[in-house]
Amino acid sequence: MHFHTGNLLTSKDVIWSFEQAKRQSDTSFLSKLEWVKATQQFSFDIRSSLTDIQLLDHLTNLFVLDSTFYQSHANLLDTSPSIILPPVKTLPISGTGPYLIQQYNPMLGIVVVANPHYWDSEPEIKFFRFMRINKPQSRLFALLADDVQVSYGVPNETAADLEENTVKNLVKVPSSDVIFLTINDKLSPILENEKARKAIHLAINQQGMLKYILKDNGQVHPSVMSLADNTLMGGKDNSSKEIMPEYDLDKAKALISTMDIPKTMSLLVKLDDLGNTKKVAEALTKMLKRIGITVVVQEIDSDDIWRNTNLYYDFTVSTWETRLMSRDNMFENLFLDSDLADYLQDKFKQQGLSNNFKSQAGYFKSLQQNNWVIPLFYQDKIWAQNDKFNLQEIFSSNGIPYWSLFKIKKQLEISSKKEK
Image 1 (cartoon, rainbow, N blue to C red):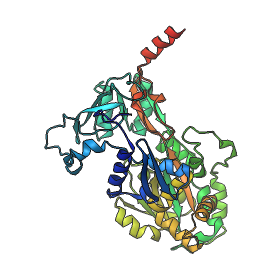
Image 2: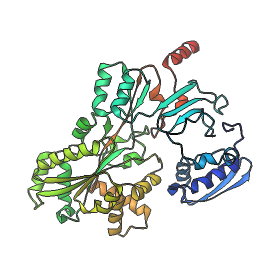
Image 3: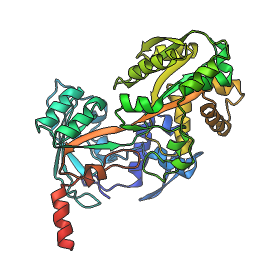
Image 4: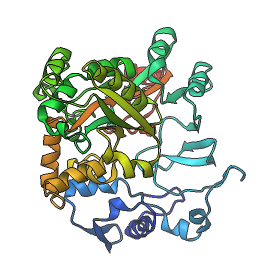
């Protein structure tokens, strides 16, 4: 296998890339990799406390780079691109991928061309221009005007109209992007009562939120275990084994009437880029009002404020998403690096599980079953395209597009006829 420069990829490049990765600010995925040592030109050993599955999952975060190229172009590692500098028109990156960078501007986008020496044969599409368009409405206009052929991040509220009234085609990709509700008993001890939490959950219409907030562009599952079992991302469907969340307002009112629950409670919302957590908070406010609970909502977008205050509200709403695929890796990320981490660590500490990961994973399952932690719904990633590409076929099991697989449908049809 060769890099874009033509240099041969060897074990010394793996070791050099590993050392460079350890110098970066976020090295959490490397913390359990003790060392990497070359054994031969094309082989190396890794020492780690991770299982094989966990290790391979973590190593998807390590990109092997051309050590010879970068050591002779050290400025490329130390100089951050700027919009005031002219676009890069010489090779700034030397990897092993199917496309070479032809032009790059950090604020505008990137132009790539097919690598004729790609190890897995040259891609059919010879040229891509990836454009950065930050506003969803601007992306939509660019798509409708045919300035772009594919657009990412179509807003839920425009998806149905786009599909029904234009010739554009939507591709909905399941993702791990989940919105969580947590229930905390620090301010209101009555919430320690399982019946109180059950009543609150019964009052929440998750399917209704999926319909009206996401326009059905998502899924409802009772547990994150579905994600860990890979049923969301194209794995074997075991939904028949799941007990789906129940919505029953009459039952909720009946349970609430038997206990002295506070009439006013607090909700902290971590605002997300799509604006969906805000909509969820508004929906929850209306739903809980129907069982006699007035919710006072506090919205924030600061990580620091969240970490300092999230344990002091009756409810919190936040999002979580991961690219990791191993069950243990996903849970470790959720337990340590997510917006739920403080809440979960507090729960684990109360149970004496602070240093026992296996027990933490088991207890997390019970937190969902007992309505402490409620995954409200999962959000699909919505792409739109001119209906002449195989966009729906290029995504990996965790929703990453592999552009080397991107093809024009007409070419596929011609190839099919020739084979016949």
